[in-house]
Length: 133
Image 1 (tube, rainbow, N blue to C red):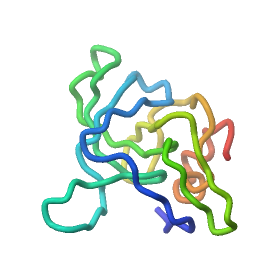
Image 2: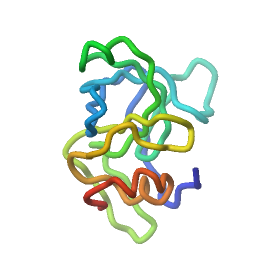
Image 3: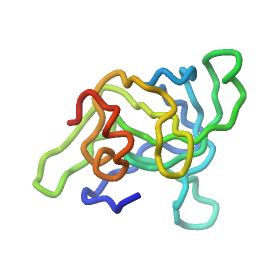
């Protein structure tokens, strides 16, 4: 996992329901925690593009439901600014289920584009992605 170059505005809090954009079997996940998040005591953790989160599967295949999974946020609706001044906005919030801490995706196909920051930070996800914006 590499550091982020862009100043990402975090918009997904703990408890947020996020759609998955892969074919792992999960459809909607709920964020439980954000790895590496540091803040004020009792403040809810926030996640943004490229963050590694722990989540529970709310909708999906019966074998996947009620399981705790690791995921990486690949799109968010809240706009964020890149160092060159470009502001990026996606239509929806989306995540990818991963197998381990190295970011190996569980699914083999991603629906939609992923952010360039995710591709730089997590190379295994960039290999599977069809479009990087």
